[in-house]
Amino acid sequence: MRLKMRRSLFSSAALLALAAGAAVRADGEPSVRGLLGKTELVLLAVVLDESPAPGGSWHRLQVEEVYWPARLEDPLGPTLRVFAHGAGVPEGAVLVPGQEVVLGASRLAPPGGPALGPLERRLRDGFHPDFAGERPAVASADGIVPAGGDRELLESVVALVRAVRQPDLDPEARADALLDAAARPEPFIREEAVRRLGDVPLVLSPGAAARARQLFEAELAGPRSPGVLSAHLDLLEAQAPSADGPLLSRLLEDAPREDIAARAAQVLAARGRAEDFQALASRFRPSGPARRIRILHALAARGGEEHLWVFAEALGGRDPRVRGAALEELAVHPAPAAAALLESAEEAEDPELRQAARQAAEGAAAAPRGEPGAPAKTGVLKQLLEGARRRLEETGAREERP
Image (cartoon, rainbow, N blue to C red; front, top):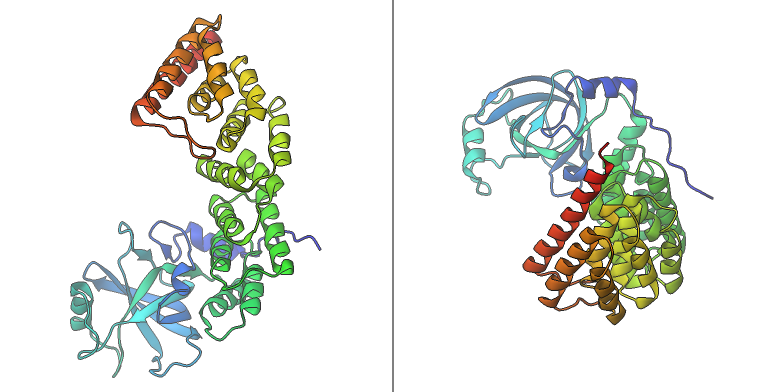
């Protein structure tokens, strides 16, 4: 059965809360990562108020439910005060009175307990409890999710927390719970769920692997979140005995960021089959400039002679960016025929291409040619190649001016 990314169930109230500055990390993004690590408490709470504290603010929370741990030896009182640095600090968080949040927090050790850092000691020593035995806590900046009354979101977060943190959970059950979370509409949940799948101490079962692949395809065809795609690529590289060539080819062509496309090309170079690269080469002609450049990089990472015709075609084209990319890769391509192709470009009729090719050839002579999938580019070579590519691009820009 083909999986589809479910329509977002994030309520309009939650969206309005986010727009108004609801509880989130200081960078404005919700996160579940801090809920899944060593944070002592994971709870559902309403922010009641805030007051000044050294380096941030105290926030009084009304605790509605404790999701983790399952049993608390040192029970909480009716309220819990947590410290957060606030906006403008990398590890800060913004908690807004009136908001319902899922929050990770750790209580500060009492006097005589484990040693605290200077700030934590200052916070504890200056804390005035509301009731006997109250212990202050510090919020986990990367463990805050605005709830906004979305019960399904809450259930997904709780299931994800328990799937990761419950030590006696069967690995297959853990994988199933993580795959369920990886189908959520919220990208911050999808990304963390897929990343945690790589921590499952077994190779995914055929059924689980098929679900993961379907989710990868759905992400690439739909939301295309960079973080989620990167997590799927990590999982594919770690779990798959041989890479899925067609899926990797689609990713390197359609990835929303160049670093993801480059990683997909490297994985494809290491694990792809000959037919994967034949299919990739066949898509060069009908593609636009940006995709053509990615295809050139991927074929160069493979390092074979059989696709050098693509580079020859790139050199004969009109787009200066594509020609520059072809020269850059030919200069470090391990195949002997690549050097001959570069030499032919040095004699091209186009004076700008000829000069750029000669610069690239001079740089190639100063550095060893790379192995397939790992081109050797010294600093001098890189500088020469960038100069050659820039010259071609400037020439193309002048030609396009009316």
